[in-house]
Length: 206
Image (cartoon, rainbow, N blue to C red; front, side, top):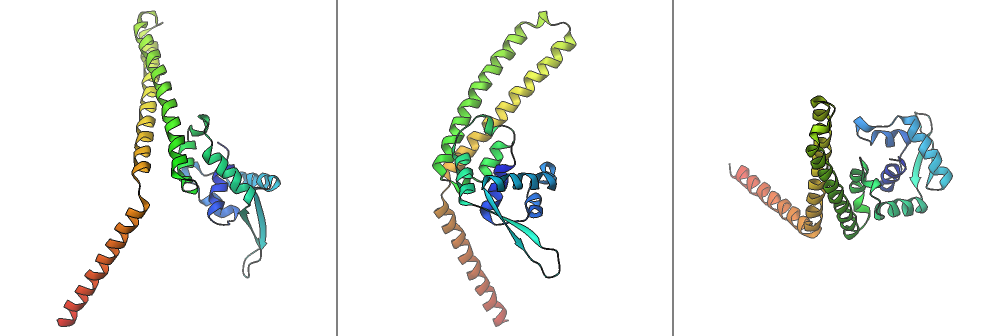
């Protein structure tokens, strides 16, 4: 997947240097800084980001990148347009990571489309697996059959896990009520302050 959209997502929150952007990626999938700067330069040419040279008193000047309105429009379009390939591999996690930038209904629409596609592909591979099981006698050897069966098992388990997660994500997003959670947190904060006052009075009496 292109680094363009994760970088635009990071910059949608705050301006950053190339070093800071690189550090925001999870370590196992962190790109080298040179690749990040290559994408930033391409995005500069496309008008998706702009850069400001910031002087520092004790350190060399640094380039601080920020997202432009065109960059925000491109990111929003990417987050709200369905493509099955876009959800593959890390695409689903990137989209969910920045889904707070778009409305909940759009994210649910995309997830439901993806879930339907995953279900259709799962059914296809399950049927292929059943066909292969029936044709076991035609395999060149038992070893060959065993290894190919493992491949089918891997494919099917991956689809089941993906479908299970997407269905869970849909439930969580659907049931999420920001106002209710805020009221709950406010109530917890009020209880905490009351408890602190009560403990303070007990200490004073002692």
